Every structure is written in structure tokens, then in C-alpha cells.
Image (cartoon, rainbow, N blue to C red):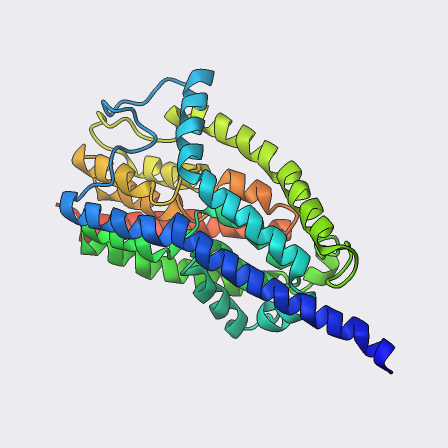
Length: 354
């Protein structure tokens, strides 16, 4: 009898150790990478009403011409801002895939109801990651059995409902912009999770390859499994991530309006919402962009479109979770994000026009 219980005890023991490792990694990592830096950044934003220069424009406020040098320059600036959070995301994803028992995570986030989606959104709040840095973690929880709805809420909730970013908006842009982001962000995250969950009612058939075929917790050497999973994530995600960021950075002149433009027509606002859905920025990168557009007199509508579309999702993050969701779900998330940007533009034009 004791020999039959040994594997179960080993499974539980390693699972508990994995949970402890994940919590410790998350607490220490998030404090060093997110919580402490953002606290001091919020104090500076309160004092200066600024987060610095917008990442997509140069110091003079002009847009660099499309070129490889422009792409390299943007990529270097971008990765300097996100590398620590990306490393933390990769470490957390590897720990989840290696040590967290699938049935444990499925009990927490595996259901398709509102409870799991709401929990996914709540778990996103303290993480405060941009869409690309959280993408590896989303892959990890999907491979361990999280439902499409809960994973969607966690995926969109991290960048969209980031409490620090909303505080930055309050201090830099004003309460109306912060409230617009909060209200429409909640609607986008919870609405997308609910609709995505319904679209993926056959996810076990569509995503048969998502669930981890590697040995489960308790089988094999855990350190070797962790190293193997980490290297696998690096090889699968990082090269395409770097290439897409380089391309977007090189072509960013086609994604954003010239600050010397007199105005942006409505068709241009809709186009901005679409392009903002595809472009990639670091956490809170949208705040200086919106501030610069408002200061240049481009009006609240185009600024609001980018306020709601730059953060939630991007072309690199879509690529990183491409095998973790049904294709129609990723198309849905992109379409809903774009639509949310257009709605935000309409609200801003009506309420915030000066």
C-alpha cells in the first residue's frame, strides 16, 4: 500500500514546492521589476505631470523616416524598457509549466464561467505586465489547462487594467482620461473573455496540441525539466519577438500621425485604432504619446483611439500566443480592441473636446 501512495505523495510534494517557488518568484520579481519602480515613477509623474518623451517620436517631436536604423533604434529603446519584465515572464511561465500540476490549475482557472474569467482579471492586476511580457505566462497557464475565458482575461487584463498605468494617466492626463481607460478597459477585458469563452466551446478539439505533452509533475528530474522548458520558450518566442519589434520600429512612421498635422479625419482615427492594435510599446508607453498628441492640438479623438488600443494587444504578443488560442479568438480580441479604440474616440470627441 505504501508503495502505491509514494507517487501521489511525491506529486503533491513537488506541486506544493512549485506553488511556493512560483509565489516567491512572483513576489520578489514583481516587487523589483514592477511595484517599487512604478511607485517612484508615480511620484515623479505627480510632481512633473510627465512620463518623459514618447517612445515613437524623437526628442524634437518628429517621426524618423522608415529605415533599418530607425528599427534598430526603436528596438534598443524598447527592449531596454522591457527586458527585465520579459525575463520575469519567461521564468514564471517555465515554473508554471514545470512544477504546477495541471489538475490544480484547471480547478482554479479551467472552468468556462464568469468566476474563472473574473479570477483571471483579478490575478492580472498585481502583475502589471505589458502584453508581450505576459504572453509567455499566458502560454504557460494555457498549457496547464486554463480555459480560454480565464486566459483571455489575464492576457488583456495585465496591460489594460494595470493600476499603475491608470494612476500615471490620472497624474499626467487627468481624471477623465484615467476614467475612460478604466471603464472601457473593464468592458474590453470582461467582455472579450466572455465572448472568447463562448467561441471556444470546442477548444479541447481545436487546441488539442496546446496541452503539455511533456512529463507531468513528479516525473523525471525537475531541474532538467525546468531548464528544458526554459530553453524551449526562448527558442520559440524570442527570435520572432525581436524580428517583429524591429519591423514595427522601422515602419512606425506609418503607424502614428505627424505632430505637425492640423487634424486627423475620422477615417484616420479608425485607421489609428487598427494600427494601434498592431503596434508594440512598453508598459505605460501610450501615456506620453497621448500627451504629445494633445499638446500638438491633434484633438482628443485620435488620442483616445491610441489610449485604448496600444496597450491591450500587439502583433508580437499575438505571435507569441498564436498556438495557445483558437485563431478566431485572436481575431476576435484584435477586432474588439480596435472597436474599443473607435468607441473611445467617439466618447472623447463628444466629452473632451475643447
